Length: 213
View 1 (cartoon, rainbow, N blue to C red):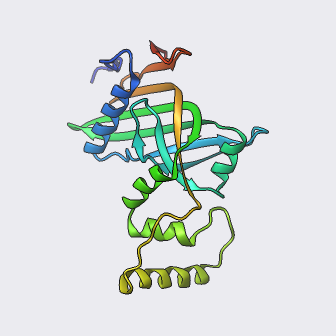
View 2 (cartoon, one colour):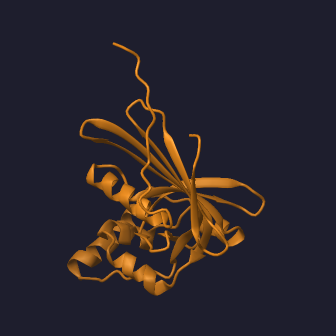
C-alpha cells in the first residue's frame, strides 16, 4: 500500500461569527454520539495556581458565551472570584460514515455571573439525581459516605412519598464564559490537522486566521 498523506480542511461559512461553526460542530458531534454536552474548565487563583475539571455546558448563547452551574463554595468559583480569566476545551471524537473525526474547540475569556432566575431555568431541567446532589453535597469538603447515603435516601423518600419539590438552593450559582478567542482544531483519518482561530476585537467584531496545527 502506498503511503498516504493529506491536509484536513475547516470550511468557515460565517467569517464574522464563530458561533455558527461552534454550534455546527456541537450539533454534529451530538448526532454522532460524541460527548458534546461537556467542557473542561480551567481556572486559576490570583497567584497563578491552576486547576481544571469537567462541567456541563448549559447553553451556547448568541454571542458565543458558554454557561455552566456550580456550587458557590466550590474551588472553581473561589478561583473565578479572585481571577475571572478562564479557559475551556470541548473535545469531540466520533465516527462519521466510518471516518474517524477529531475536533477540539478551545475558548479563552472572562467568567461572568448570571442571575439566579437564569440558573433556575437550567435547574428545572436537571435530573432528580442532580437536584438531590445540589442539596446534600458540598464541593471539596470531606464526607462520611454512610452519612451522605442516609441524607440522600431521606431526601429521595420525601420527594417520592411526600411529593417534595426541590427548588434550586441558594448555594447554586450560574456563570457564563464570555470568549475573546475561540480556537477550532480539526483532523479526519490520518490527515494533518487544520486550525482556525477567531479573535474578538475591542469593537466586539470577530476576525479569523488559519494557523499551523
